[in-house]
Image (cartoon, rainbow, N blue to C red; front, side):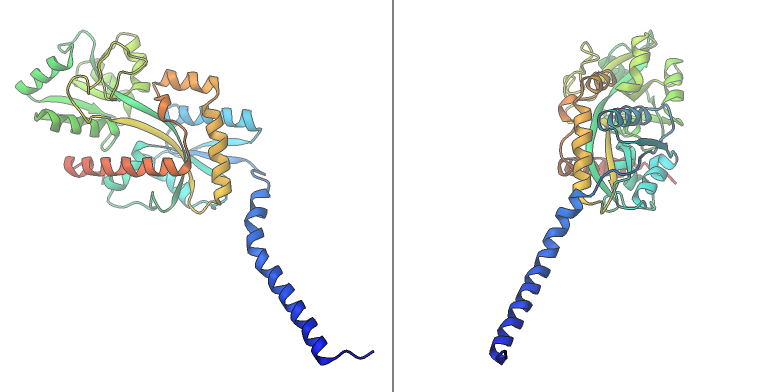
Length: 336
């Protein structure tokens, strides 16, 4: 039986239209297929851009261990200290964008270093993707117990008479910049004495070689609890749960003095959104478990602000960078 040319043309057109419709559907199917891919199918590496045993390491291991427990994922903690955390974050920035390399960052390397160092091997905003805010811990102004300062007003009066010294765990750290903020608010001369880490700074304050230290609440609590340091004020807007008898700087009249250390998980920029969302969801669940909540409370973390979406964490980091960039510029702090 013969087929007319018009019939053949209609059949060809139908086949062409069907093929075009199928091709049009393929891009729409791809994201769905991407979401159904098994993740994770191998161990996840959590980079800690700090030495073992410190606050960032403690926070990272708390989250990593609980994450492995609640999900049966394999999470390997990898300490990569050096250059104020830049070495560790650079490793994450340059890793494949597949969600298998994440990092527990903190204030210095996530929000301060871009303005402190003359150049960095990565762009903290373009090369890293925010996942979730883990904790926000206030600082506490501490002095030697039994020393000459027993209150903030007493300390201020002394600073108005002659320059006092304040310790920090290094140039450009949150403790250093908090001291610079307070120095400007007081309008007095405070001499910065940087150390290589919090431990030697605390030792010198306890011994009376340096007058004061804006330390993280997590770091200072053991020394305050043992009576070797006296806490004069916390740098949050309200009092800390761990130190209910210690006033906040806001109570003492120093408004807009909200200095704190933040901890948060980031991954490589370009990581597929479904994977970032999965990480956010699972770590968010970890942060809500009773054992982690109790641990965070013992660190002095502000429970009200932890967690949230990647977009919320991204906005929070942007706000922190705006604040610290101004402080770094005004203080003249820098690292060669």
